[in-house]
Image 1 (cartoon, rainbow, N blue to C red):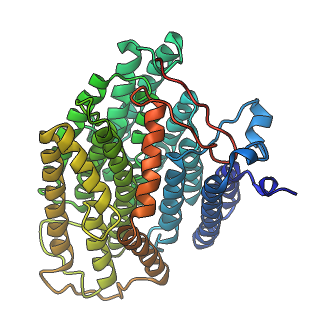
Image 2 (cartoon, rainbow, N blue to C red):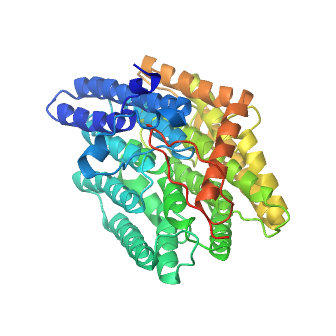
Length: 496
């Protein structure tokens, strides 16, 4: 037996396990038992996600045909493949869902649907594992269903969410239909009928102003855990990578970068004046989501400096991972405080430090990590993004720094309001639970180790940036490694 024959269908299994688990959990009436089983199922899915990344990293050209192609046997072609871009994103999604399920307290388990969460995890993993444009559109559309179902179940207003998500889905379909009609060759110029709808769809999904009100509405009406899981993987940026960047000309990307830059500064400023903790988190997320788009769409105007674009995209991909992980940790911290004290206000000092010092330290760690504090996961990526932005457009780099500074001030301000200022009196213990403690330690370890040893992450994200440029018309062709799970990604040759 050769080494290649030991490769398993990791991608398909990581997607099917949460679906099968959801079917099992739906028959369990006991909420605590459902949480325990959901934690086990999500942990198994995470192990398969890690296995697929390791399998992809060790796969060679000679082993590409030894993989078990389950989907190709059903539909005649391989739908789920990994590459340098998507492999870390599936791991990020697996970590976020597992930690969210594990840290759900008893006060929340009856209002938090573990069945819907497992189905949502399966959809997100399928989205990040798909490169086919129509497959990406289908999975992105499917991902919007569960938040709507939860809003209906909670008898909360759905109009704002439905209008924005319907526009998001419809614009993606219109743009992809025109792009397919005009031809699938990525080096030809597509019409505005193909580019503009996809551009608007990406703006809506990422919450770029003025299409950001659905995010605040979702956090106001949905459960905190569902809202955090829906936004923190930043799937809108993935839509930009798979649908927009391969067909959009430089001027479109530059224009979108400017719009995203305005949103980053605007949202950072808004986070300073929020009186509700959830709205504070929303604007913090919107600012980081916009910064990721700024880096992804950063194209140097100077032909003598092609490396600027590569460094900018590398920084954006690093910030994507660090922001997703850090903001999810920050959101879970706020969710844990809400589970103990109810909705959190930022109009006066709360003084929760004495009761929950671990959550206080984790709040400040994840918050500062999200803005690229030294020795954290986002530090080097933020530096790369700022340096390349200054080289390409000096005002862009200055604006990114201003946004990061405002976000940092908002995080410190929220920390003092939530954890200091007075002595909070409670008749019950508010100390951190065992499962929360392990989740906090795991996330803190990832954030700090990634900051102290950044080389592997930066090198991997640099390869992803080169692959992304190969798949667009902004970079000459270079050799491509086999895609994840053994399927070799197709290489498209730009016009000479």
